[in-house]
Image 1 (cartoon, rainbow, N blue to C red):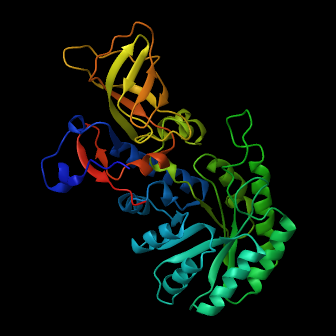
Image 2: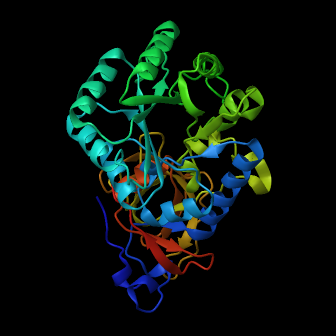
Image 3: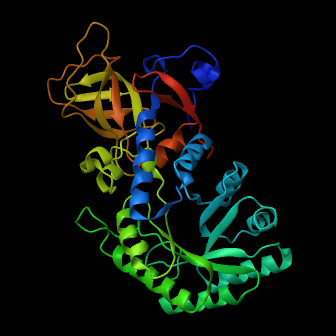
Length: 406
């Protein structure tokens, strides 16, 4: 939606003199490079210690630069949500794409068959199957298209009220048998997503998540014992909130044979001040290993029209609001000839398209032009809203930009 801050406007990538974050047009959404670098190391170290692989969900950012950095940090592959994301990642030269969805669009099936199932394809591709009808559609199209290689399928397990995924375990095993017996597809493993299960009062994992992962473990054990999986089986689950539970329930200690356990976390790379600060296994209480929020919004105070109310220059067109509203972190710059206000107790209580309502303690004095620093919740929604995100270093200098391709 917004894209004012480009390399050509004065960042080093544009070949001009470096600029300071303070010189950017406001509101501005920044990404802190040191936080991203730290998060890449922290997550890679955690996965290595847990004995699991990471296929970061690229839908979080859809940035070629971040894909490169995640690849350099040891990513096993990348997760995609849509056929368009699959095509983009393959075009960027990604060697393995885990399409965490069922494939039912005939045009997309044809593209996958031509480009990813061809003998010379440099990209390994896996997707989900969760029904007999979905498998019938795939088989009919693949029989017509006759690709060089069979399509690797992950059998997805689901739960009542969830998204895709087989609900019944007996039906899932029967479907696995059909996949294994078919010529144009092969069973690669089992998948699930625990992140949308209803949560309880405990801030930890949803009460039913362990049960879902136990079902995944039982199904993978059954299909491997019956010889239905071709090659080393893949088992995959885990978003950005409960990947510790996934590693515990589906990690190497749970198997008596080689199994590749793959997490699909995406938001770890930028983390946040909201949902993932609260739910990530690498949250704020993990000390030096904790992930660090990389997003920072800079926005001006527009007015203080009544006691206890401040209006700031940002809104739902600039920040994600699907989880919770931004939090005030501090003051980036005081207005001319005025002291910086104490922002303790300041709360964002509502947003319009480009205005934010902040409740502040009675008697607070704040001048128009004061520049606030704010943190966000849910990185995906922040990447959605900006086409050019200035990348800043620890000294607040703009050293580049991240350009999501959504």
